[in-house]
Image (cartoon, rainbow over all chains, first blue to last red; front, side, top):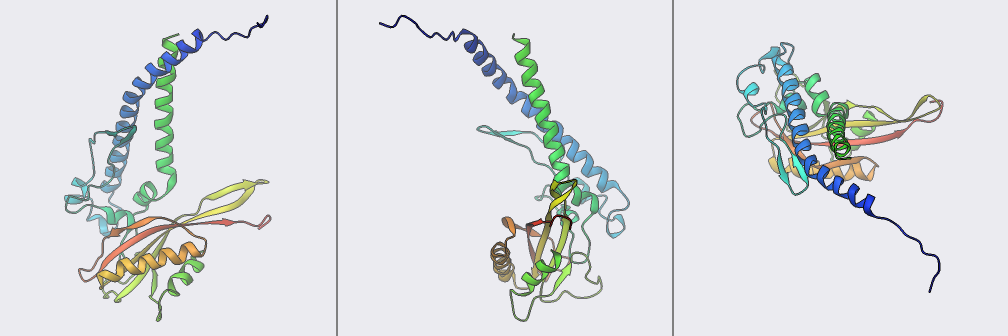
Length: 146
Length: 121
């Protein structure tokens, strides 16, 4: 029979695991809120561009159906552990302005919309903000429970 | 890399399909029967070494328009294959795009090329 034993007290770990579990449940709410906030920013920025008189073709796309096709007040849907929210133009609606992002053979892409939807930086900044929002929420929740 | 991209697209068919910059076709003129357009969305630095860019990430959108709806899919698929063989990265299988003319349909893909910048270049 061994005279020396190695012990590991797991009670501190159990408390940490319980905190993480609670934080995980709260994280879903934080993710939903972060995504909806990001969706509002994207729709706001898209509408700002649409309202700009400098849009291609003399700004004829800045009103009416194109403006109405911008997704606003979207809600988050969860599929298992994946949350998603629609952003940009609703292509089921007439006049949806996807062509403002891609351009057409006779009309260059709109610079601002191309920057938002085709270049990486705008969406990366939005995702960074969402990540920091969620992590701050989780960390705050864990610190509350100590 | 724009010239290299144009060369790959032109080599797909004989006679070559024309390749234009997106948005540069004359408003008053009719579309050619089939053609490509391209747009360089951005070319950010890929990474850095010794206070200079060591690589560039070229990001293009490639569009194909045709009055033959079937070839819109097949030609763009062939473009995807040729670009991947030449070392380009192609995201997904593409998406439909709006055409100015009711006679033509269009489809696009986003393509990327990681270009190493020689040191001191």
